[in-house]
Length: 339
Image 1 (tube, one colour):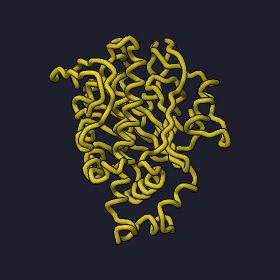
Image 2 (cartoon, helix red, strand yellow; image 1 turned 60 degrees about the horizontal axis):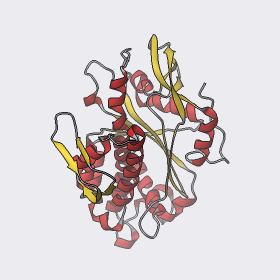
Image 3 (tube, one colour; image 1 turned 135 degrees about the vertical axis):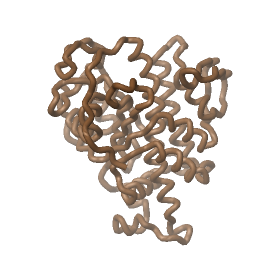
Image 4 (tube, helix red, strand yellow; image 1 turned 120 degrees about the vertical axis):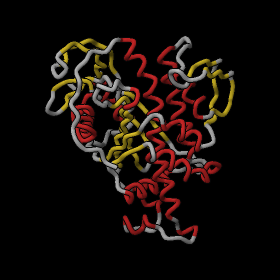
């Protein structure tokens, strides 16, 4: 379903500890978001039938072909994933997007660009501000315009996920197998039971996965946690699409899409699923490249907020390199300046 309307943002400063408390949700939402729409689309495609099962192939009707393999040579497709966690925001705050990921699906695989929520960008009609404020000012439509201007990539499709659904997705998959590097002791959510994980390869259930991704008590702190979250995203994605998990896809679809809203139609989701299916290699895995907007923290004045805020200021030179390695190969036009 499509979210409409514009919500007025409430201007308020954030304490450093409040900002740190939200960092952990980025990785959780990215795992849910990438899985939610694409896994759901793939499950929808498979449920609709294919020539191999004797059913009809709706993809052929949609795009005029008779095999999902045709999608490999088509133009790249872009999807903006937004992780909005309304329940964990203060009631009086306008809804904001805590996770922003631009996803590119093309013949060579899938690539993702993570944009930190505090990234300083130009928001059309408002000026320079944190990118996640675009969601509060004008919903997903304004966020699409903002991301398009920042990256120089025209993006039309979006998906918004509720991070609480990650637990349901992991449970629907039958758990996610990871290699826990050290002993972990963390609550899955504030007020929840303490969860303890021993080092080693193991299958985590939904609450264990949340606790594992929140934990940052090792020597690397937030950097170590980001690495674990990125690894978790890849594991969730590839395990969901593995041959061993294929029978669970309808359950994954239900868990994922019940926590996601999108402006894509059912036919567009089915076509997207077919395209992803065509990218699977012999072992069932899909090639994934990921990057994050490079930059540094700096306190600057925000005209829309009317106060000084802590921003993530992009390094536009390095950003061009990250773009070329992920969502915008060199043969495509250069990104717009982030100011």
